[in-house]
Each structure stands twice: as C-alpha cells, then as structure tokens.
Amino acid sequence: MLTWIVIAIFLVTFLLIVFEVFDKAILALMGAVLMIVFGVFDFHEAIEAIQFETIVLLMSMMLLVEVARESGIFSWVTVQLSLKSGGNPLLLFLFLSCITFFTSAFLDNVTTIILLVPITIALVRGVGGDPKPYIIAEIFFADIGGVTTLIGDPSNIIIGGATHFTFNQFLFNLGIPGLTCMITVFLIFVLILWKNHLHPISNDLKKLFSNHLLLHKISYTFLRGRLNKVFMLKSVIILFLTIFGFFFQSTLGISVAMIALIGALMLLLVAADEADIHVSLRSVEWSTLLFFSGLFIMVGAMEKVGVLGLVSNSIIDFSGDNFMLLLLCILWGTGFTSMVLENTAFVTLMVPVIFSVQAQLPPTVNASLLWWALSLGACLGGCGTPIGASANVVALALAEKNDSHISFLGFLKYSLPFTILMLTISSIYLTLRVFYF
Figure 1 (cartoon, rainbow, N blue to C red):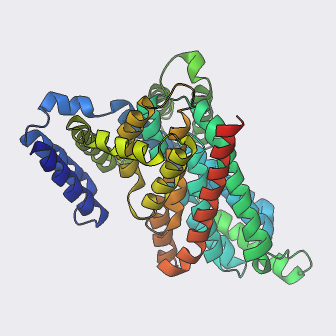
Figure 2: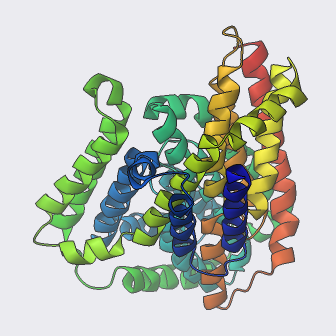
Figure 3: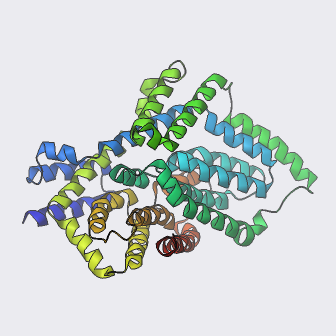
C-alpha cells in the first residue's frame, strides 16, 4: 500500500511540475513533505536524502557567475569579439557560436543565453540580417557546450554530485562527443542551411561603413559608463583560479563543490567594494535549490520502497546481456524524454536507477559509460523542443521581447533533426568506446 502511495505522490507532483500548474519549488517541497507525512521517511532521513554537495555546487556557481557578470567582463568580451568581426556575417556567426559553446561549458546555459541573445539581436539586426538563425544556433551551442563539463549543465552537476566523478573525467569523456556535435552542427548551418545569409561583405563599401558605425554604437550601448577595470581583473583572476582548481581537483584532494564555494567566497571578499553581497545573494536562484532538495527527497522515497529497483530490473531484462543495447536504451530514452520533460528532474530520478543497473553488471564492462550515456541523452535531448531546456525557454522569450518571434514549429523544424543527429553521433561515440576503447 505504501509503495502505491509513494508512486501516486511522485507522479502527481511530476505531472503538476511538467504542466507548470504551480511553482515547481513549491510542488517539489510539498511532495517531499507528503513523503514524511505518510511515514516513508522521518524528518532526519528526509534531510539525509538531500545531496547537499550538489546544492552547494549549484549555489556557489550561481554566486560566482553573478558577481563576475556584475563586473561587465562577459559583455566586454562578447562586444570586443563582435567588433573584431567588422560586421562580417560569417565571422560574426563564428565568433558568437564559439563564445556560446565555450562559455556554456564553464557557466550555466541560462546565464550564457541572457548575456548573448540581446547583443546578438542588436548586432545582426543592425547589419540588416535576420537574428532568428543566430538565436536558434546559440540555443543549440549553449546546450551542446553544457554537456562537455561537470559544471556546464545542472544534469551533469547532479550526476557529478552522485558519482563523485572529477571535472577532468567529465571533460575527457564528454568533450569529444560535445565538440564533434558542435563542429557538425556549425558546418551544416554554414555550408547548407544558411550559406545565403552568411556571405562576406568585404566588397560592399557602403555596408562596411554602416557596419562600422553600428558596431561602435552597440559597443556604447552594452558597455555604457566607465568600466571598472580593477573589478573586471579581480573577476577574471578568481574565475581562472576556480577553473584551475577544477582541473586539479584530484591533486588538491577536495570536492568540486568546495572549490566552487571557495571561488565564490574569494570573489565576494576581494570585490567587496564593488559588489553588494546582499544583491548577489538575492540573485541566487533559491527556488531552484529548494526544487532540487524536494526532488532528492521524493526520489529517495521512491528508492526506499523499491520502485526504482523494479525500473532498473526492467531495463536489465529488456537489454539482456547486451551492454551496447543497454547504453543505447539509456541514451535515446533519456534523449526523447528530455525533449518534453524537465531533464534535471528526470536525471535525478535516473541516478539511483543507474546505480542499481551498474551493480548488476559484470566487472568486465566499463560501467561508467552508463553515466556518460545518461548525460549525453539529457543535455543533447534538451535541444529537441522549445521546452526541452531552460536555456531554450529563456532564449525564445528574449527573442519575443525584442520582436524576433520564433514559433514552436519554426524552432522544431531545426531542433528535432539536429537532436536526432547529435544522439546518433553520441551513439557512434559510445559504440567506439565499448568495442575499441
């Protein structure tokens, strides 16, 4: 009876979250409270079910990025690279694509989109172009960049918190498929889909002159006021030290969450004169952290009553002794689910399932590939629809706000084929890892 109560609470809560009936943080916490009320957990067990390392990592990165953003360093870099393009559509597309991809690997996707989309719209519209193709591409590159590192996407943060894989392990195992997807998508955009939109303008003197004026206007618009070079320098140094710490996590012997927390606290201390700590704390998405806390408790309850064990046994029974089939089931199943559901919530649910599946595998197989399949499916599957990832929703909302409406179907005609292509690339990568590496 208790098992069915837990399943009912979880499913009802999950559906209410999917259809956004109420705020997802309130729903997740209510679901967690009901698990305690019905006796699945007592209060202390519920608290123990929360992965506080994941919560601290998310909070620390939010603080670090917000304070660095206040310094203006991200906008400055973007505008300077845009100026280097001289308004050339092809160079502009290349610069914006690379900035989006690499920034999303070390910042969260939503922050990257918030920083880049307004600048992109102003630049492209000013040179007489249509910003929609650029925005769609930036959504893809933000989601692809997020898959490559431990801190690039909340799904990876959840996986990293549960497995204690290092930053370098994520980069080594997911960097290759991520970079391959990025280059493939970029080449298809440039050589096939939008080649007519990206012609060079070096022979058009009139357009060159107007672009020159426009770029300086945009530079003033996004960098108005005197930039605080000392604040920017402090932010760059602390960001690089934090990333350096991620790379040498094993040598340092401390967790990624602690490295991120130290980085955030260091920046708050050295930039105390420039950044208001109270403003920075208000910028932290506390509702997101509460959402994950409630979700961890609900998933822990599902695991305690044995539901997730049944799911893992079903997956094992379906794939039999075929490890490759098991990987593909996780990759494509997670990918298609992440197109329509909150991928972070689904990954949180799948973490104990993967642990259970992993425990049933023979020691001769590389069981870590299960986690990379889960990450690739969740992050790349989020590209599939306008609601597949938070970055997608935010980017389309910003486009709408700036009179560049992108319809659901207009986005889907690009996103669905590209998502299938990227999941195929990931399948090939996993196959090579199983049989040759």
